[in-house]
Length: 546
Image (cartoon, rainbow, N blue to C red; front, side, top):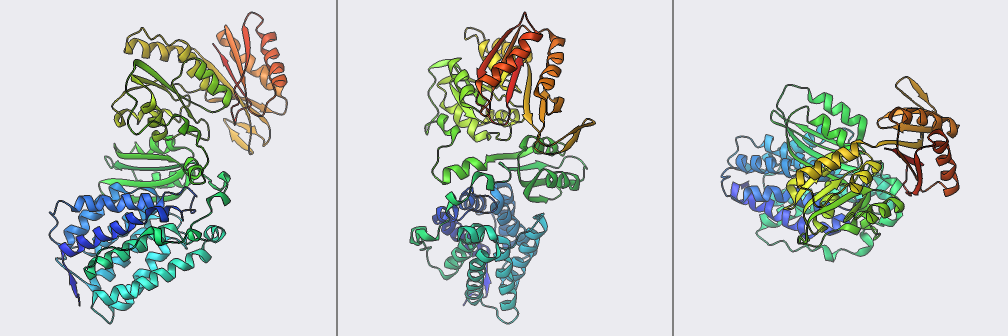
C-alpha cells in the first residue's frame, strides 16, 4: 500500500487526471448549463489542466514542492473559463500547502486539498453552492476525516471518490438551474474526472473510462435555455502584470459592478481575472492601469450557446476553412455590423466578410479572426464600427499571418463612409489614412429607447422614452420623437452636412422612416437626404451626416 508519493508519481497522477478529463471533455461540455449555457466547461478545464501537464513535461521538477509550484503557475496562466480558473485556484492553494515537501503523505495531500478549496472560495466573489466549489469542498472534508486515522493513499481515494460523486449528484438539487436541466454540475463532474484519473495512476493502471459510455439522457437540454437566460454576453479573462502600487481591490470592485461570475486572483506579480460582462473593452481598459497584459481572452457566450443547440451563428457565415484563405489580391475588408439591411450595404460596397455584432452583442476576437482568415488577401482592413469592438479587433493582429489594419470606426455609418472611399490603387499607409479621415468626416446620431430610469450629465431620463445620442453624448430624451429630431437638426446644422442618411431598424416601418427623413429634408433643403433599410436591432434609427 502507498504511504507516500514522490515527484515522479505525482506528475503521473496529474497526467492521468488530465487524460481522463480530456477523454470525457465533450460529455462535460454537454452538462454545461451554469452559470451560462455555453457548453465549454469540459474544453476549458481540459485546456487548463493540460497547461500544467505541458509545464511538467520538462522533467525539471524533482520534488513535490517543485511539481506543485510548476503545475500551479502553469494552470493559473493557462486557465480558461469559470471552472478552469477555479481548477487553477485549487492547485494554487495545494501548492502553498506543499511547500518544503520532497514527498507527500496522506496527511499532506488532505491538507493540500483543504487549502486549495480555501483559495478557490476566497477568490470567487459570490460563491455558489451546487458547483465545483461544493464538490471539491466535500472531497477535501472526506480526505481530512480519513487522514486523521489512516495513512494509505489507496484508502484515501476509496473514501474521497464516493464522497465526491455523492456531492456531485446532489448539485442537481442544490442549484435551480441544474435542476431545470436535469443534470449535475459540469465543473464538479470535470473535477471528479481529475480525481478518478489520479487514482488510476496511483494504482498503476491506465485510464480506461470513456465519455461514450455515458448515456445521452444524462446530458443537458440546451434548447430549454433561451438566449435571455445569459445575463452577460462576454466571458472575459486576462492576466495583467502588476507594475505599480495600485490597489487590486479597486479593480475587483469595478468588476463586481460591471458583470458577474467574477473570479479574481492576485499575487505580487500578476492579477488573473475571469468575469462575465457586456463591456469587455471597459474591463481591459481598467486592467491596463495596473500594467501590461500577459494574456487576454474574450468569448461570446451567446454564440457558444447557439452552437450547442444546433442553430447557425451569424458570425459563422464568414468562418474560415481550417487554413487561412490563400491571397488572391492585395487588399481585403472585414466589417462588423448587425442587421440584414446593413449587411447588404457592406456587401454591395465590396466588403469581403461580415461579422455580425454591434451594441450589446460585441463579437469576440476569435470571431473577427475567423473572418480575417476567410478573406483571400494579403492585407485585411477591419472596420469594427463600434468603440467597444476596436480593442478586440486589434487583438487579431498577432494571431494571423495576414497583415491586419484596424481602422478605428466607432459607428456603422463611419464604416460605410470608409468603405465608399476605398481605393485599391493606393499604398497601404495612404489607404489607411484615407479610410480613417473618411470615417472622421461622419457624424452619427442614434435613436433608441430608455430601458430604465437614469441620470446622465444632469439629465433625467425616464424608462420608455426616446433617447437620442450623437457620438458619445446625449442630445435629448422624451416621448415626442419630432422634438428629438429637431434637437438633432440643430446639432447637425453646426457642421452644414452635404449628405444625410437615415438607416431604419428592424422595428421600424419604411413609412415611419420616410416621415423622419422629411424632418431633415425640411431642415436642410439643400442637403441630399436618403432612407436606407438597416434592419439593425437596439436602435430605431442610425442617422449619418457628412
